Image 1 (cartoon, rainbow, N blue to C red):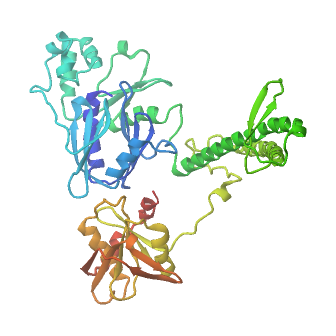
Image 2 (cartoon, one colour):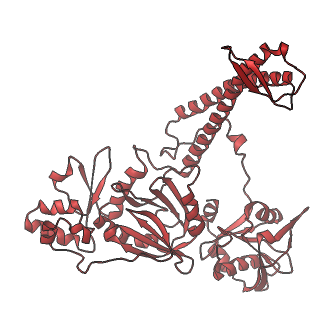
Image 3 (cartoon, one colour):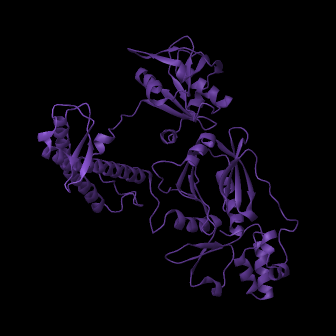
Length: 509
């Protein structure tokens, strides 16, 4: 990606990123990253790829497929920055890097997206080294082959473009690039291979037969380039249902492969069982031995380990049973694989960008993932972006503690009387919750309690690990240790204001 395109791109991205919460981070592959942001009118996924020649930074409504097991670096980043907000943005566009200040009230971490070095996390933003004269003269560009060392944004492609134009035309192009915005951008590429986007028009002699396309914004130009990197071979972005279906299919195939290897090992036991059977007449069949020496099929001595818990005869019978089980199992596995492959052939594009198409139903899906009934809970989103859950009845209150809450989540309940349970979801035991969100959770607990008509409420807060349910009494608990008590004024309008339709989706992720 050209540094001059990066300059205009980050200007467009700034208002779309600032203030949004980072919900999840993924790595679809080496050098590629997906940041899932808080839902808003702008696209939800920030896609970032770093490579010496194939870089990308774009916003997308869809996400690429992620591996089943995240890498150690992904887990390390999730532990530290997941759930934080983008409070500040620093840009060093000449070096093609962006730094996001993450935190709840102040930027505690700075995540750097560097198109050359990759992703990094620091306690301070990077320091920008801006040259005194950001734009060198045309003569310096044409005469100094090392101009890029002092001015990284003067790329070889820009130098070749300016060198091939008449002096007046080159000067006009160079002056236009220095303006704060551009009216149009140019994307070059063919049906296959990488794409290239520039804020200036590349002469025909430098295109190498690539087709030209004009777009109106840097965002659109970056998206065209990024789609070729994140969604290659003509594959369209995958929707959530398609991603889940494909992941499930991959898990089933992996289990089939593991079962097939196990059954094949069972079948191999038949050979040593027959060797033992052939020499059984001179062996102590009723004794329990750890090892026997037998003559192999080629006449050479062969040591065979036995299960010392079984007699020699019982070992032989056990091996024959396992060998027969392996033969039957291989037939069953072959049938299961044929069923799955036939489902894929009948719907070859499931999970590859056709969200309107229903995923093929696996014959084993019901056994693997039984349906879970929806829990009767109210879902809220605090002013700081924390998910808050409140039970609608006794069973829901019980389920909040036993099924939905983690030990380090915060639990709220009105003091000295009946009421609903409220949970604030946290990402880790060290994840701090701002005072505003704590008071909002306390108000939600007070509004659904015996204090609802009083206008004020005293609400206790504790970690879920210190709240014990009472067997046979759904909704009743024993609090072993209280974290604090909050005295709040009840605001009924706040309940409507914080209740969001998409809060459930945010929690589900």
